[in-house]
Image 1 (tube, rainbow, N blue to C red):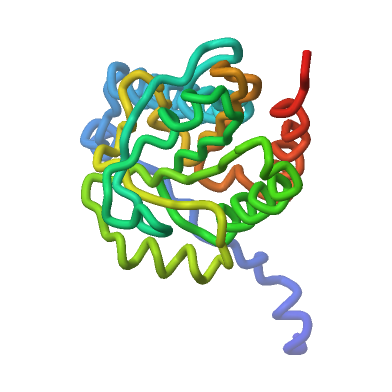
Image 2: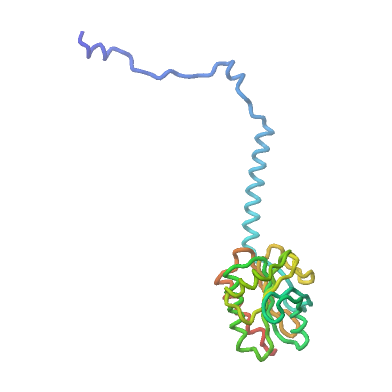
Length: 222
């Protein structure tokens, strides 16, 4: 018999079949039904939380006084301009002669906020005879006027004073949403005519363009 014939007669090679014995099966850890149910429930709660967050993010942010309401007086510590270092109530000054104005409340400083203020400043310049004014109030627990003034200078702001309200919640009567990073309130004749609010990251070029469309409402004679 040749070597080839011997190989042909050998049975084909097979991997050994590994099985669990009854003892091994009995000793295998069992997952309790309540553990499975708990894991499933936690999974559903996590998914529901993600869905709720997505829906909340998709909805517009609402903050501050609604249209038609009268902006109340409040004072804040001014960091730039002639009133630097003084507690000033610009809203009081505007109401004295029914002058229009724009209040910007912010909880953080960035270049996009600077662009918004710069564009508002430029848009109101042709109407300076109306006494219209725009200012920004930073909401924070501790004032740093030097840092704020430096930021305003970097943004190229000239006619728009900026200052600090030393309470992160803002003036109580304005009912500012804690989720809002920026709130913009247009008013004339002592009444709000437009209101915009943005969560962190929502203020962009498109949002600024939307805000700027409300400038003519300040000078509407109706």
